[in-house]
Length: 88
Image 1 (cartoon, rainbow, N blue to C red):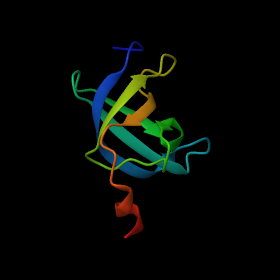
Image 2: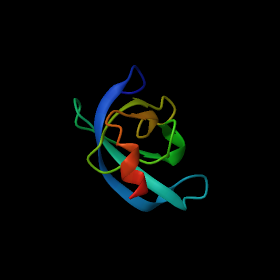
Image 3: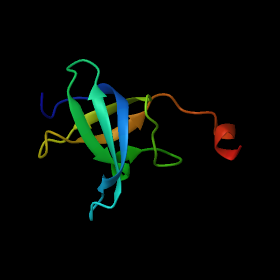
Image 4: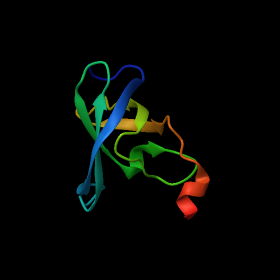
């Protein structure tokens, strides 16, 4: 499936490089829960009010980029962590 509405997925991996304009930013991999396909994205695609990061195993909602059907965009975290965890 390419384009279309929001998809649900799980973050399955994070690589230290491969994302961003120069390829030096972290790259995330999300598995579509329904279609069981994999998509990549970097921190610029994370929609958040706080830190632009996700963790392996987190559930997200995302869209598939129409011009790049192997990439996710507008990634939204569904499992928000307790803010106190960030300050331990």
